[in-house]
Image (cartoon, rainbow, N blue to C red):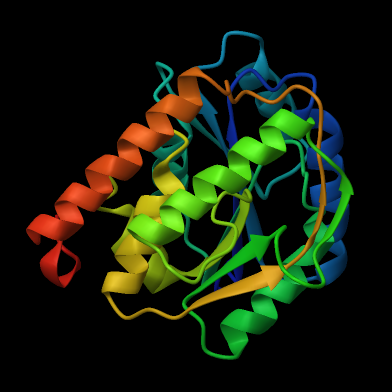
Length: 248
């Protein structure tokens, strides 16, 4: 790939994902190799203690496009993605959850939206055309929908599903939205999208296939409460003009 522009960077945050990551990496490699264009895959190990780092190191020996970024202590999904997005070099920068709840093949839908002028394209489980093939437990689904209703009222009207872990950015948008990111945990999506909207960057919400995978790292009580607290902080800062012009 020497001398070629990096077309795509795929960032995968990983915290204790030694069991779920291997099949996902295999599917990612097959799909991206078949596309026959310059790409890189950046796995960000978020202070794992289960051998995730060693697993990725072994895979790297036979996969030159695979990179490993290590956070020495667990910081949260937002912090991991910030590190990966800013280390990436692709013209397009996609992040995906380690379990591939949204199949990697759905990437083409987001790329089409970027080609049509969006700066951010987000996968959605809540639009006509979305296909939720395997649902979360009922209580988790209700909590997710409730969170998105609150989010729309407080900071991001018009977006139906901000929490799907499948989002694509242009390089410029990734840099402008992730560089000042202040939310290290699961509530980071709201901040990133709010920063994009405040800069006038077009956000396209795209229906995708989604399949719930076992072994989620999100705690409904602990992480759900923190996400609401993060959302309240965003609302206060939005109201105070803290981010006027898209800055810190």
